[in-house]
Amino acid sequence: MTQPLRYAINVTLDGCCSHEEGLPPDEESMAFWTDELRRSDTLLYGRVTYELMEGAWRRPESGEWPDWMDASEIAFAEVMDPMRKVVASATLDAVDWNAELISGDVVDAVRRLKDRPGRGISLGGVRLPAALAAAGLIDEYTFVVHPVVAGRGPRLLEGIGESLKLELVERWEFGSGATVQRYRHPIA
Image (cartoon, rainbow, N blue to C red; front, side, top):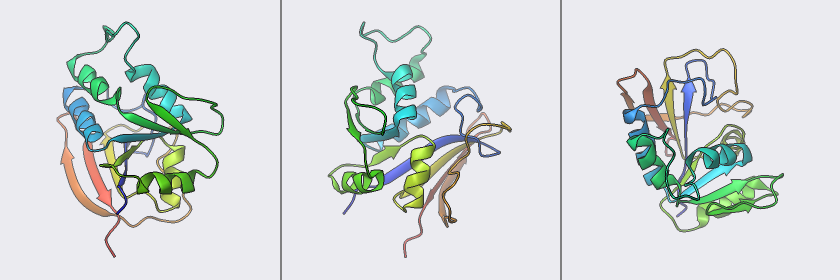
């Protein structure tokens, strides 16, 4: 049995996936994202998302979290920082931060990654998830839909080619008005 590949991302009402366009994080949303991380033991990112996450959530060499972080952000960082990370990139020569690099045929590499033992793989980003969705490798999709119209930015699963028929398995609303929508492929 393969471990599940779970894609989760913040998105605006018009399908924008820029992390700068949604509502600012609050305790409730940070607790949600921390729990999402705990569902998996591996993180899978492309280069852009890996570098973004590393810049924000890697423990500084001093060992002290930055002053800008509140308790909910520190809790998130303390879960993410030690997790195993896999980075798909054709431009990076090396990675660290508990990470390994995959290159070449990413779809084949992710198939092999799913065959390894584990609780699951948490997928983030925009371009890599579109390629993996097109290949039928994503088992679960979780969208935190923010009540914002961005009007610009990268779009959710843009360019996948064919439609995806998904089954809604969960939905709830945060106090901020953002909604969590969790989908999976229907079992044939």
